[in-house]
Length: 87
Image 1 (cartoon, rainbow, N blue to C red):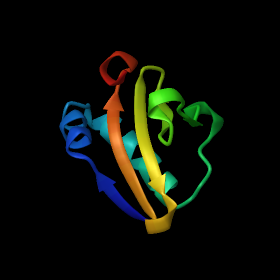
Image 2: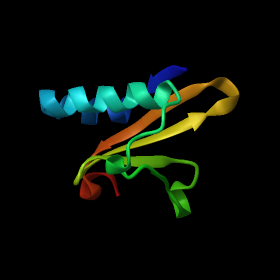
Image 3: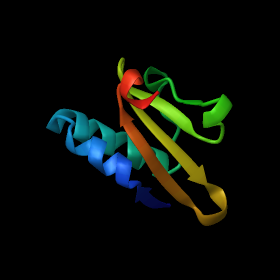
Image 4: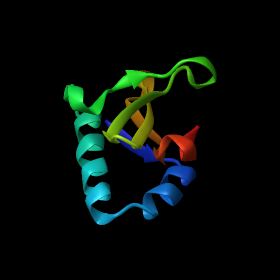
């Protein structure tokens, strides 16, 4: 699966610690390979104005927001940060 990082994601990603970046890449790789994430990541679809996007918790207040477009087999990494930064 091809991975695309939005401009906003890249900007937010730069602010993360090296450990958080490593964890994010680990989870992104799992998602892009079609693997099911462990329960601890609380992976779920979003609702309302964010319908179509999914979110997982890398840490209690470090979220990865993403979208998978099956027709083009692309994982779009939309945002990464705390609840207050993203919503």
